[in-house]
Length: 310
Image (cartoon, rainbow, N blue to C red; front, side):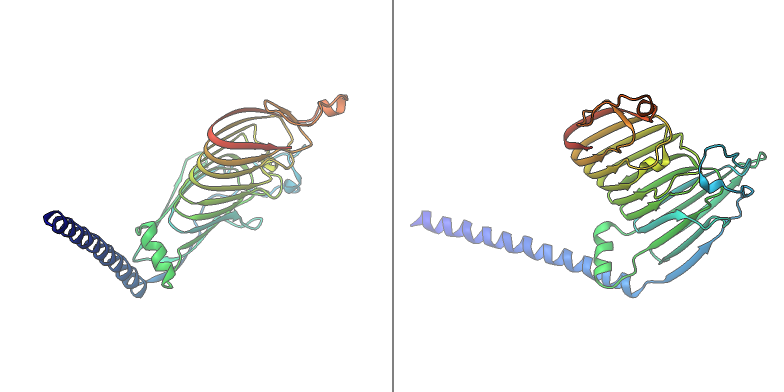
């Protein structure tokens, strides 16, 4: 009889413990929900347009037609560093002849945007833009569910100016379009978010270096061959990736792929030679075919399914 009473006592204690944990979870949830609701009520929406006065390269007739035989305009070379966190971000070319422009809409009580511009004596310049919101992903999600404002930043890059681009993204959804621009090198680094990267038409000149680094997110690309980078490096971890290498390749390229813990697909273009990965295509035999650009692959993958689609 004593054993039964002892078992019932432990059962009652266990039930009370579960109820206490449940009550604690409800209290914590209520605190988060209350904080999110208060944040929505206290929003201070700001719409801001930034137009930094960077030196622009003089226009060149026919520059948009491609790099073959075209004398590119001297001067005005710049570097753009964008550090964007917790929001929706759009990066795209401005209209021909237009300067760099930033359009933003956000809650200034929760987010901060800071820019700086440095110019050298030789005409080179460096522009930096940093945007970040203080709320964590859980609280931000609750605020959006309750009708809060989603921070949004749109950046229009000058297409007629020679650029190096350094893009750092975190905890957000980003859409990047670089078609038709004049970019020597680009580095895109992102974590905990989704990135859609497209190059819908050839760049003004082939890119020297193109680096993409990502983790814990989703990467979708379109027509990266239109950048025709001499060196393409992709390092992606813990997520899903679609790497589309179609486009107008105009020269050989070294492609280094490192992919770990996720699923990914690489779409191979048909009008180039492929070395370093197995494909179903036959080696070209004619002289004209062997003169086509060559993509030379080095790959490294672990705990992942990386597929090449010919």
